[in-house]
Length: 110
Length: 113
Image (cartoon, rainbow over all chains, first blue to last red; front, side, top):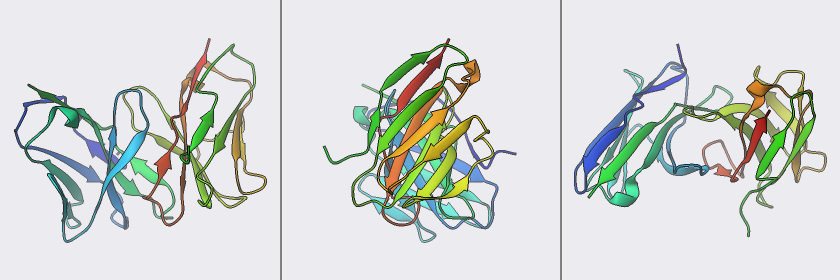
């Protein structure tokens, strides 16, 4: 079983839509969780950390469910510029290495 | 430019040749990481340095791979006797604190022919 599993998509949504991505992770001892964004042929960039209490950054909301070992990302009022691959990331036991999912592809259309 | 720099951006090499990549992290970052990414996959962890000490290595890092960070600043990743399966994007990242606050470089794209 992969450490981090995501639906690869693609998710095609119209501008202004709300879209949600989920991922599951296998290591119940993991302590740190993140969402990264990766544009085509570019490096990954940290979008936001994910906390147990849930956290919001503008149009983006991240949630963590430790009991079910899943993480979610909600994007409200989608913009064309949100088109990218969203990588679910879980820290390893050591806390240094990050385990990345394969990513979920989002395409926001006019 | 105060970001993470990687050199070269692209490398095409013949199978069996050795290649070396360089990474210059953000200057105040003491942690440096190497990852590998192939098409359609997320980045895979290769190795981690804290200052000059290599503290963690993935089992993906076969004996043909070696990484160094001799003075705790820049790092090199060498691949000996390259194979076609080594073709990938090699990403370097650095951070100051615990994993998560990574800044990635633009990567070195390796093609082995």
